[in-house]
Length: 305
View 1 (spheres, helix red, strand yellow):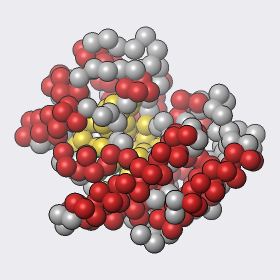
View 2 (tube, rainbow, N blue to C red; view 1 turned 180 degrees about the vertical axis):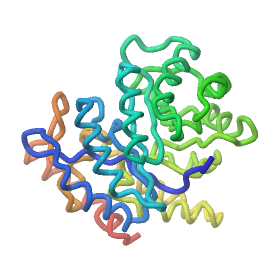
View 3 (spheres, one colour; view 1 turned 90 degrees about the vertical axis):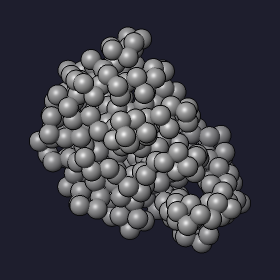
């Protein structure tokens, strides 16, 4: 198993003003991420509004991103839906087009109340792409599935041959540490909270997936470099800058609702969000941008740290 390294962006799905897909943005989007030092993309997940698209649209987005895949820039396709039949279809498609891996959030309708039920769901999905690595996407604040991940790994490894790890978007650091060290450190546990990346690194995470890596990867790469050099004071300062920004981001809707407008601010307009998501008014956008200027955000984006 090839473990991932570095920063993996969770891209926004570009859309036109009427809500239709704007796939022409994907190539320059991928070029920007590569230039910024990002090592991959986790597409059609929470940030990518995956659950707001139909199956055919998600396939079209995946095809466009996989065209930009290289040895140093891997594409993971999120295939989670409320139906394992649909998810399995998306997984099969991801394998056919040559994606690096697939990931799957647990079903949010009739959600599993036992680990065994979650494992059964994931096994069906993973079987659609048996030749690709499979990651379970653990994000209980969205899925409302709060099942213990150490138990998931223990049971899932027996029935999901292509299981490689977990996208761990949860603040239970005890569970994360247990998962990282399970089975002799076999599993690829990807950290999922950008504002707490330093915590994940101290637990042993080697890669992270997040929405703010779309536009401020340089800050986090500096953080990782400082951590690896043992300069914890500098690492904490970089993390604090991230927190200062995310504090504002949350007030404007969080990583998805507040993040997509930021892409426009940094020069890559990904369009509006789909209903029922709230899109900022012109005045809100202007005030938001001013607040980011005031904290020096655009200097961080441009590497002036």
